[in-house]
Amino acid sequence: MFKLAWPWLLAVAPLPLLVWWLWPRAERPSGLSVRVPFFALMSAQQEQAEAGQATWRILLAILAWLALVAAAARPQWIGDAISMPMTGRDLMLAVDISGSMETADMSVAGQPATRLAMVKAVAGEFMERRVGDRLGLILFGRRAYLQTPLTFDRSTARTLLEESAIGLAGKETAIGDAIGLAVKRLRGEAVQDRVLILLTDGANTAGAVEPLKAADLAASEKLKVYTIGVGADEMLVRSMFGTRKINPSADLDEATLNAIADKTGGRYFRARDTAGLQQIYEILDELEPVAEEQEILRPPKELYHWPLAVALLLSLLLGLISAVTGPREAAVSAAGEASA
Image (cartoon, rainbow, N blue to C red; front, side, top):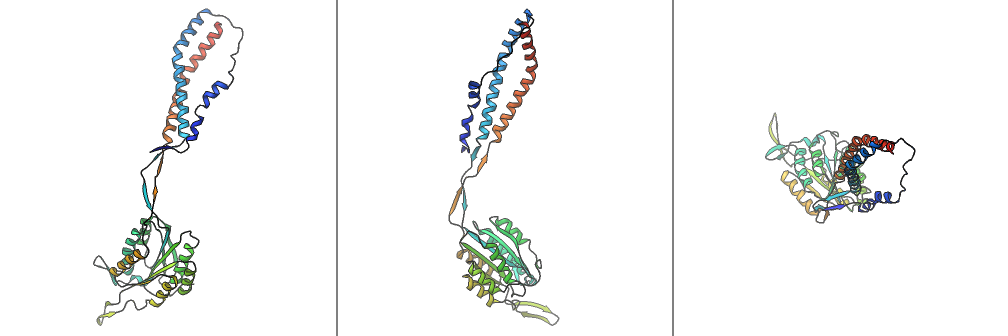
């Protein structure tokens, strides 16, 4: 629908009329001049011919003024209602990109894949489903850094996750620093629900903050932490002595991850394959449901530039008419005064 953002500005529309009524008129100068009879007839004919032009100029000036007033009132077109789901939840993902995440004990679409590639595929789908949440992304190895600040732009957050690479933050694992950074970024936010989902395949081997101390800090800030241990239980490797089975997740510190979740009111999950991680994210969708309440938004589209353009064109046309007829009227006026 159509509306005016500042309709009270329409009250200034009669202002030129009030000025015309109330402002004292200037007196024409009088003086002696030489009378030339035939100029009087010429002046009368010219005045009759240009009476219509004067009317048109007044009309153009009025239309230009009304167009300016209409532009100042900010006409808008209010669009169709758009439902904006809102949850008031801040959800941060902390993803391990240390050297061990390069272990190819996973599969994606039936093809062998590294742990990080599997996390990207599954976590990316999870991020796309989180309509109404503000999402953030932390990547950590030897150091932890913020890859994506909290945002409603889920597609951008997913793209930045997919662009992450092994070893970008070092080869070691700083779980405590990742939790500490999440607490720092989420501290002071007005929302009530703040959630951190931490994915790792190892133990804390670097960083300035111990994981359990970081968990205590998260608990004091009411930050709920869900921890996910990534890695298969068995893996076939080839060597010069033949093929043998190994446990690629031997370094996974499940006890610490469990303790972190318990301290903060979250849960610990074990992801041994792609299907397992998908199920974990489905459980997380149930534990932290997406938006149900919706906020109705009607986006306005500004239209003031149209009446402003009309006012500009009318002003240019009025100026052009004055430039053409002005010198001729001056000459006739001078002749009339001379004949008088």
